[in-house]
Structure formats: C-alpha cells, structure tokens
Amino acid sequence: MNNESQNINKNTVTKPEVLHRKLNGNTEWKSYFSSLCGCSVFSVVKFKITFFILFLLISFSSFSQQQRFPKPEFETGYTQPTPTTPEPRALAWEYIDVSVLVLVMSLAAWFALKRRSRKGLLWLSVFSLVYFGFIREGCVCSIGSIQNIALTLFDPAYAISIPIILFFVMPLIFTLFFGRVFCASACPLGVIQDLVIIKPVSLPVWLRKSLGLIPYIYLGLAVLLAATGSEFIICRYDPFVGIFRMGAEFTMIILGIAFLLLGMFVARPYCRFLCPYGVLLGWMSKFSAKHLSITPAECIQCKLCENSCPFDAIDAPTETLKTDEKKLNKKRFSIFLLLIPVWIFLGGFAMSKAHSFLSKAHPDVYLAELLIQHPELKEDPDNIDIQTFLSSGKTMEHLVTEAKEIKQKYYTGSWILGSFLGLAIGILLMNQYVFRRRKDYTPNKVDCYSCGRCMDYCPVKPTPNPSREGNEPTPNPSEEGNKATPNLRQPEEGGPLQK
Image (cartoon, rainbow, N blue to C red):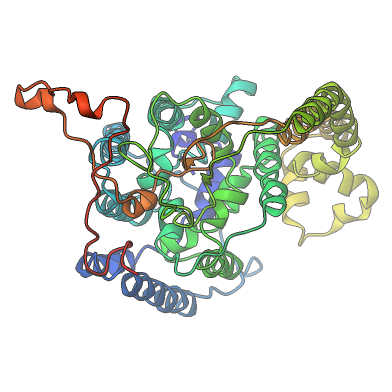
C-alpha cells in the first residue's frame, strides 16, 4: 500500500512490493468524481443517490472493458523479459501528502470543535476522498501503515520511510487531542461510506458489542502476518481500492459494492466492524483532551439529538442505581476482573494450536509442506512456484529449515495474538458492569467519528462571551439561584429541526 518497499533493493521483489503491484489497477477513469462538486449541500439525499449511481455505472464499465491477455507461450522461442522495478515516488511528494493530511485534520478539528460546522466537515471530507482516494488511489493510507510499522519492528532488513511513520503517528496524535477527526474528514475509506448513508438503522447493543471484536482479530492477524513477512492482508483485502483505482479483480469490485450497499442502511460497516486502525484510534479518543460536543452550552434535555447519530454513538443520560444494583454490579465486576488472566491464557492456548494452519500463509512454509506431501510435483513444469524454487539453487533441507524457523515465529506470535484477544474479551465483559453517571446526552468518545450530525440537531446557540465586547456581565439579584435559560436558535426551513 506504500511505496517505501521500492527503496530496499531494486533487484529484489519483496512481498509488500509484489502486493503493491497486484493492487495497482487501471487509472483511466480518475476524473469521474469531479461531478460531485456540482451537488447542492441542501439536497443531501439527492447528492448521495447520484454519487452511488455514478459509482455503480463506472465500476461495472471499468470491469467490462478490462483487457484479457492470452496465456504466455514458452515453446516457440519466447524470451522472458527482465523484470524492472518502477522508480519510487519522489520523496518531496510524500512529504506533501503528509502536509495535506495534517492540514485536513487541523481543519477538521477546527470545524468540529470551534466552528461546529457539519457543512465544513462534509466538504472537507469530499476533498479528502478526491485527493487521498482517487488522485492518490488510496495508496497513502494510515490504515495500511500498521503493517509497515510491524514489519519494521520485526525485520531489521526492512526499511521504512519517515512519511509512512508520520502517516501512522499523526492521526493518533490528533485523536489524542481532538477526538477522531481523522475518521471525520481525512480517511477516504470512511468518507466514501459516509456519503452513501441514506436510511441508517440502529443495531442491538449485543450485536454491536459482538461485531466490535472483529477489528481486534483483524488487527492481531494483520500484525502477525506482516511481522513474519507473510502478507499485507489489509492492503490485499481493502474493499475500496478497486473503486479508487477504477480497476481490480471482479471479487474485489463486488466486495466494495457490497460494503457500500450495506452502508446505505448500516452506517460505515467497515469502520465500525472491521477497521484495524480504528482500534488504535478508539484507544486514543477515549483519553482525548478535547472532543466534539453535541451542545455548545448547557443541555436542555430536548432529546432532538437522541436519534441523530447513524453510528449509535450517543450515550443517553443515566439514572442513579439502587443500592442492591450497585452491590450486584460490584460483585460481577470483581468476578470478571479476576477472570481476565484466565481469558488471556485460554486465548493464547487456543491460538497456539492454530499456529501451524496460520503459518501456511507464508509462501516458504506452504511450499515446503507441498513438496513434502507431494514430491512428484517437482517434475511438474507447469507449477511456477516449484520450478522457481528448483532454479534458485536452494536445497530441500534449506527450505525445510527456513519453514521450521517461520513456524516457530508463528507459534510465539499466536500466543501473543491469542492473549491479546483474550484480554480484549475480558475487558469487554468487565465493562458491562461499569456504571457511568451521565446527566446529559453525550457522544461516546470511542465510537464517535466526529461527523457533526448531532450538532445540527441541537437547538442551543453558543452563549455570547461578554468579555469579548469589553463589558462584564452585571449580576441580577432577582435571578440569583435561578438557572439561566439557554438561547435557542430557530430551525432553518427544511433543516433537521423541522417537523
């Protein structure tokens, strides 16, 4: 997904580089998205429907016109050309990409926290979709950089560029200070799903909690496979890369369309139930110094924002628990807290039993087991993988030794992965009995994408600051002890407050 793998050795084809080449598709239809610029902000539904229809037409057109090349002929004097490595993208352009990312996240934080503008966040997200999605073809990706970081930590021979490190770190830093503004307007994978939301449905809590474990599994597998040099699965199974590049395998195009069709009713399905980078962003956002708020002043309990969030990320006010309920919650919380080490051990033990199966994702392990089980395949001239190995000069003993070392890495990594998943399950169960007192409707810091929809539903206007006009507010003795009434804004015609 990133270009730094091209800088290691131009005569060596590394796994990430091969994957990068596989994902590169046809780029002849980049300009179709420019039609979005003419959409009216006030016709949101028409805007989304038009966008989706255009996407369907162009995606199928791209697939239907894809070239079909005949099978290569090797028996009539054909000479295999020497493979060449394309020149890496200029380093200056990579730093420009980083600058654009930082600028977009800065503006998103300003729109979300200071201006409180849903319109500003919307158009900023459209820019990010055009630039990071269609112009850069989804290749500059903070989500995929997880794999580059993991491979760098466990493979001394792998070199990573500073821009890729910045693409991984900067969204985490912004999230720690301002909430998930990266998800709001900078991530093209999130934006393309956000624009097709038409009639979102609310999922049951138990289903959301259960599906919420999938990103932890995906994150753990992605780190394990990348650290062992096996595969970059986040890049390979990116459901939207074929859309951004207007050319991919048929299955990937179908996968992208399926996610967008599902996203019309289940808002941002990839972000909520699959994105591995979202796990890290959720951790950072939980402790964010500042975060988007529904109301700019004191909440008046109008409940207009209660159903405004398509992601079910608004927490309602809670009532004080009774004494018996408090005791029961404390007892259950203590039990699940003591069970966390058990979950960690069970998860690690279960995953360690699957390490042999997982290790087959590495090409050397797969090839070694294939030759051991079917030695007659050495005589098969049509098996390119085996013939390439035989022509490399390596012995079978050397291949088996390398495969054993890789399987040992998988055994250790599987224990760590399983322990991580066991810890996640234990904390999830324990949190079911953590009571948090809330007086107002507030965004859930972990699940909120800072899209700003809830702000449009709040009728409370920001309270003017008298000190800006040089006048100090004069206290009114008759109003002492009384609660001030917040200023209410009048709903615009056709706005979210209109009934």
